[in-house]
Length: 264
Image (cartoon, rainbow, N blue to C red; front, side, top):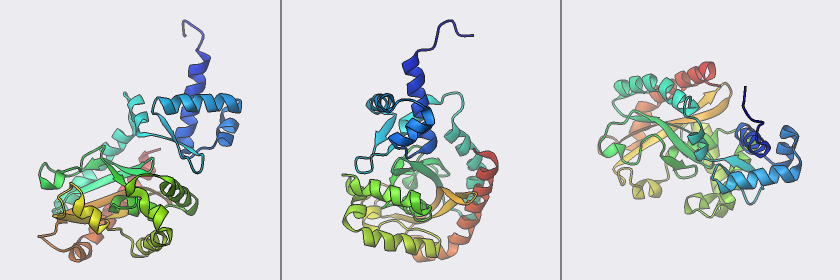
């Protein structure tokens, strides 16, 4: 039993943060309904959480979402660490099977965050480790996730990207029709490749490495993306897709079953 009465403002802030984390794209109206707190109270709690870096607000839609800083709150049990540990044996088996490394990433705000990798420390490990973030529109990890989102979530993410001032999000603002066409193509072919210019200019091998990604589903909704990468000098992208796609898709299906059965 607690020695003191709970601090009301702390309880309210934690309640709001929990609901934002559950909904992921939350409005004031939703938070008011779920928390039973007055709207002005909800707003004060949100402003505090934004100030501390645990929540962010999309200026165009007015929706609130959790940031990666919320990971710091889970020390004894970290859901993402649990997911990483669960995925690791399957990803190592994939590496032994195809001879190339892979990355598993989940959505974090408007980026993908790598939570597990089978890379060793060499040129192909540059900028590819757990915690590294990948932009949605320019990387294969981001594109594979975004393309297979259900319509409401995809639309919301695209609105948030379009309102962003980051250069990596510019296609959503400058060429929405092109982005829509790209995502439709990815859904049809079942995999995504990175933006060529971004891949050549990134620190991840500076154009020496390429690869592609496939979606990972939890039940019937996209939950993560799984990529594989290989040296362009070893095989061109088209050959890599033809050779490695069946194994990557099979591994993504295996991971999806594990996630659906063991990760809530």
